[in-house]
Image 1 (spheres, rainbow, N blue to C red):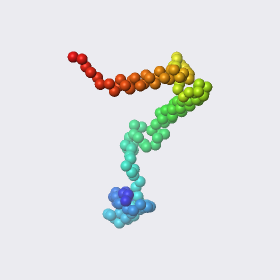
Image 2: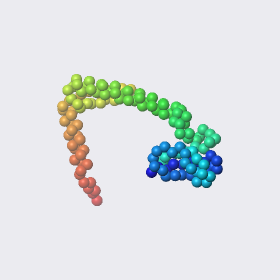
Image 3: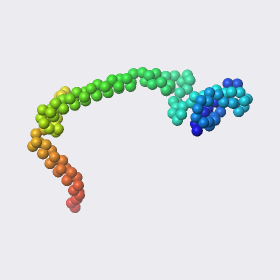
Image 4: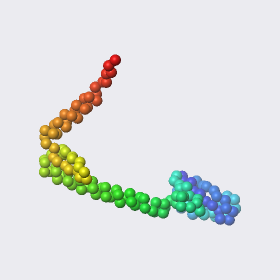
Length: 144
């Protein structure tokens, strides 16, 4: 059952009650027996915020606390994803034209170029990978 927090407006007593889930706008104050309104507190998540603590405090309102940073990061991420999507389109065209899924990437100054890998180059790459795996499994022997 959830814990609800109430604060009496008459005697300023704050108290907690564990009640069944539901609407509990008020509850009887244990001190003066008046109806005390429910306080809404964070459930397992809070911000270090004190009234009048200035701009360094976290208010819990994202746009207030971080007015530009995440928006800039978001734009940057969108630009990056757009670049990836364009690159994937180019790769797809090269794969279709070359009739193979294997590609050779050439990085230049300010550009990236893709070519379909020839069957011989693909075999050479597979042999190199096999060799690397074999060498990785070899025990290291030190000579005295």
